[in-house]
Image 1 (cartoon, rainbow, N blue to C red):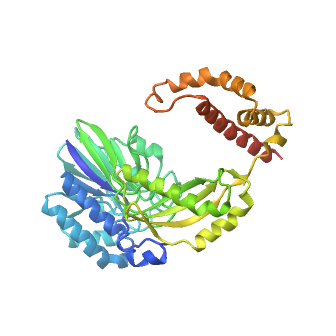
Image 2 (cartoon, one colour):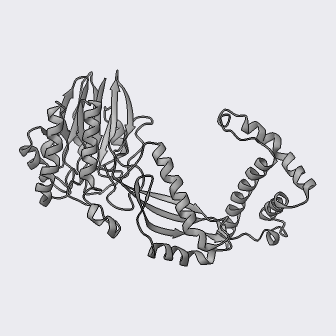
Image 3 (cartoon, rainbow, N blue to C red):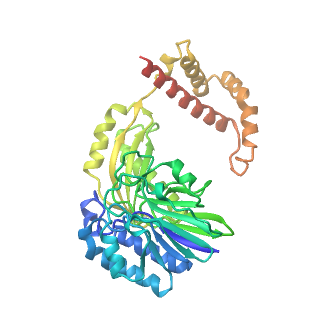
Length: 418
């Protein structure tokens, strides 16, 4: 079996933007150099056969000495373990990466001068292309070589997919699919694609978040190749992470309790990440207040107060901060008024009032109407492991949740039609 550690855009020399003042001194520790060192630790621990870099290793040419120190130290650690480092140049490091490769002898630049080049690694062959200048307006795949090989072929390329006219090596999905490779490992776009499904053709993503809009997991990919079969594993090693955090305030009676609710949801989110083995040094939360509430008109002011008074806090060993708060709360539903209408929204409102009402006979009739269907679902394979009795309260909860969701959609459609 051959194992590769594939790393997307690093941008060594660039520091993350938008951090709170109290974390400003940690910008370098929360940046790509730390993620690079963590990736090297993984490469050494897992004894990979090679490390692949998909371009934009360095932010700018003037970052030569910053990148030289950070890159060289890591490359030398890998070289000491006889792990080759194979890279292609992107649009950011067109000139500086070849110079770094000339200075760091263990760093191999593949596809220099815009010429496709191949590198054999046991039963695997890497084929790559590097930017010859900062802008390339034609597809490098137009000159993809004819390859006759019994080895598993892996493509390594920095490009702009399905963006005709782009100055950054525009390629089409059809060109990528037509190439005789088992997988394409792409650089340029910072959001990682899902590489574990179907034929892997996609972006590795950035190694660490550099701006708040880069939400979700960031890190290298471990690629295992055995008898022509590929298996991908994403390693979320980034020291800085940003996540969208929906917070439903529908059950909130007092807007003043919103900060506590946000903290509670954040705590649950951090616990979920920790259970998945994801423990960044810092996490920025992009909170979205959602739901329906009588407090809706107060929420913009409450959100602004939370932002103005926000401080970094520690949760599950992680520095947490609120990056922004968006308000998408809608006014509470007037079910009694809606129930007087004869349209589908009115019918749903009537059902909801029945579920919440004191007329036990009507409520029991409604629950009985749906009990058998929900019981069949509950006994299905997907839900069999859930420890939840399907009693009256559970049935009512499921029905109310579904009815509220449907009613909200019906009312939204009604508003759009006006």
